[in-house]
Structure formats: structure tokens, C-alpha cells
Length: 213
Image 1 (cartoon, rainbow, N blue to C red):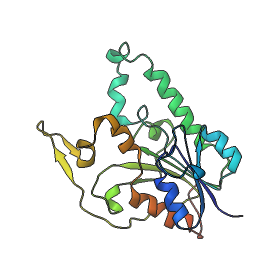
Image 2: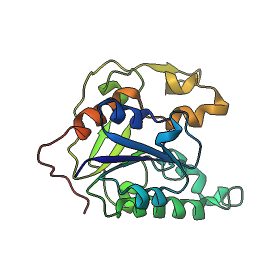
Image 3: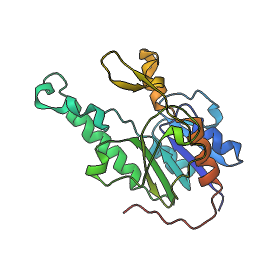
């Protein structure tokens, strides 16, 4: 059976393009139109795309604003009146994450920042940083893996930070990003990580040991 890759919640096609570059059939799926090749993109519901192409490898980047620990303060009682829909929104985000995890697909990777899924479900199988894959930007990223080996670092470099006047340290890429499109910048997978996924998972023929459970 030939490998078919679906990359969910990806409008950029960074990951999809790297799998295509190694000769594999890969598609992206997002509610947004793609910034890449529309012939490889499903604009719409990811579960509809799964039914249509029946992928053997699914990589998904679920929306994280309501799942990440950096947003936990907004769930405190004093902010409930200001943000009345965040609690229900978090429940929907958790359900989407878990619906992806429970899909009957041979190989799955779910990517997200450090967040509540580690306690709601389980700890990730691996935590990676872009600076392990040739980028100077720090961005701690969790991977929950099913039948996939952990990614091996490809090029470790020194991370760069911007120190604010308050003394707070931020990744340079985040500090200088255009605020209007910062969410787009944050949502894109770094090219070095995408290449590692394609080269290590797309071409992997060895024994697969990690499984959801």
C-alpha cells in the first residue's frame, strides 16, 4: 500500500511541500485557502478530507490559543465576565484534539505547544525545538506520536532571544513579528522540522514502536 500523507490545519504547505519533495503523495487541509499549490489542498473540514483520501500518515497542528498554558490566566474567575466563551471554546478545542487522536489511521502526529493536553490526556512523546533543526528561533513544541519514531535533531544551533525593557526574554522571531499577522507566523512549521518529518517519517521503513494509549 502506497503512503498517503495528510497535513491538517496547514494553509502554508510547509510540511506538505517537504513530503512532496521526497516523492510522496501529500496533501494539506485547512479552513483557509492555501498559500501554496491548490491542487494539493483541501479547504474545509479535516474529517471530510480524511474520509476522502484515507491517509496512512496524518500530521495535524490543532489550533492552540485555548490549549496552551500561556493562555491559562484568562480562565481565572476574575476574567470570566470579560471572556465568557473561553471555557466552552477550550472544551471544543480539547474535543477536536481528541477526535484527531482517536482516528483509525496507521500513523499520526499531533503537534501543539506546551499546554493542557498533557494533563487532560497524556504527556507528549517528544518535545522539540526549532534550534535542533537549524533555526535560531526557540519554540518549545510537543509531539504526540502514534506508530512513529521520535524526530532526530538534524542541526543544533544556538537560540536567539530579544530582551524587553521589563527584562522579559522573548524569541526574536516573536518579538519582531508584525502583530496583525503574528498568529500566521506562529502557526507555520519551521522548514527544518518539516524536512526532518519528511526525511525521517516519509521514508522510514524501520520498526515503529510508539503508539497512542
